[in-house]
View 1 (cartoon, rainbow, N blue to C red):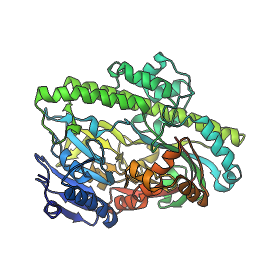
View 2 (view 1 turned 180 degrees about the horizontal axis):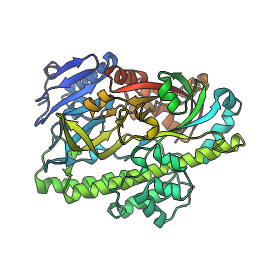
View 3 (view 1 turned 60 degrees about the horizontal axis):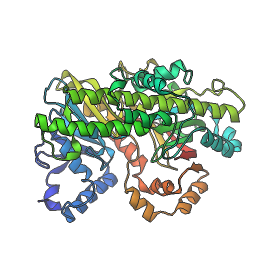
Length: 505
């Protein structure tokens, strides 16, 4: 029987100005405490969701995010606590914006597709240019249309990068090494990508024929939902030294941000794994609070099959973003009658925010090998970490935080405090505040477009319905989210970007 709202609140208490503790007992079988980061405004959204759930006696829809955070804290083998970032909102199994670490030395520890998400290695890539807003403005409409023409968008869109079944097998195994071999990226692009654009555990034989069939025609496509390609302008620089290391010298400089993932292939990998894991849970008597948290022990056959298939899907996503990088560079070169090299279209960084990975971290002062689940959460490693590029050793890893359609985006950097407090993890974006159905009911297509036009933003979109779903008011304020992470010290603000053109599915 659900508790009354007032009773629920007894389990939640502030830790400091930016974070809250979810005490043991809030949900059944909690192994560790939960924690979420929020300022006063974001906190109200979290508590209002819980209040509404209590009022309706827990009937209908996803569980509130605070309940999902606590359910993750009940999973076998979890270490320290279940952590949610300020952009957290309800999702399938794990809340989106939830991260959790599991002890690889614990034979009971699990891996869960719900802790990665259906869009495996959904992530963000940022390219810089040597152009400024004044250079782009006279050609903005033409450039936006050319990008829209070059990059296939929308549900069911098909790629223009030539690929046969053998190429797909190689791309699933090799990731960005395949893109480099085929001439779609520059050698240094790999250096500026999380995992260098290739997860070595990938095994294409663990990816089903159905997943491959879905993925083959979609390589080099943006898809739909919240995915986009944006032409952005540097609006503010908070850390000049770190920005200079990224090739960003002054406000007004033009960048390109690409946000997409593994398309239908990743979705199918997750779907296939959930079926396998339900059987494994019965066999191994694994108990979870929510069926959507279907999981398997990391070292079981099912756990290893998923890890290898997920790594292959992650490689596919990096190849997908690399293919669109190639198409972006070609579009800019065409409009400005130049070459991508002369336009200085170097990749600043590429980060994933839906992934599970094996990492080394200190737990209670001792090094531990952990299975990190980051769902709607971004890796944010500090200065001097061995897994970030030489260019960023003194500044920390760039962290790319995509805004919503028509709102600003940010580049952050990782910190030592984030490493010790959140296992080197920070937010990933704005985080939904309304469901897609609610947005369609409450926003008008033309009004949203008019508002973007007033801001001087060009937009090309394949589906009018998507404009309502992705309206800025559908999301939390990305600045609130970023400022909370900055205030908590788990990442630092470096650059603010504002869009001047948006391409969506």
